[in-house]
Length: 155
Image 1 (cartoon, rainbow, N blue to C red):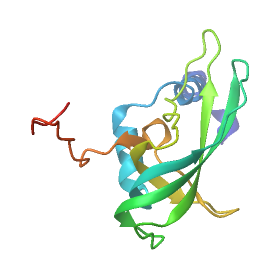
Image 2 (spheres, rainbow, N blue to C red):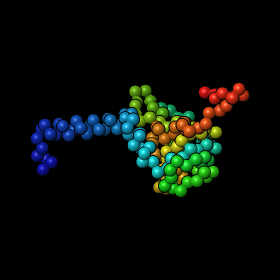
Image 3 (cartoon, one colour):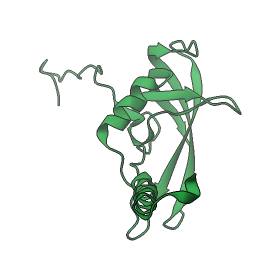
């Protein structure tokens, strides 16, 4: 049956396949990231205790990053996370070369950063992995503002 497709249908399917291939290599639309965040098994606010030092690599290389983090607040958790738990988070960062495009990268975090993290439990090796691609780490919107000595909120 597939062998008897007319020329128009073959052209359409080839164009569709190529379009899907190149679209998969480009930035994702915002609604995709929002859906990934909604589907994340765990949403927590964490403070980074230790950030791995990624070795400098040339363009076109994926860096694997590991963070040790303390859970400050649990928004939702299918993994029964609790505040004050220490967890390991696996992330990655792709350094694009000239002319390369792709999905956004997650923020590179450093020690003492406090972020809202969208995570899934890793299938192998324990710990957690990012669940929403480049939008897996966000500033925590509920973070209280610091007071200045005059009693006014700082920016």
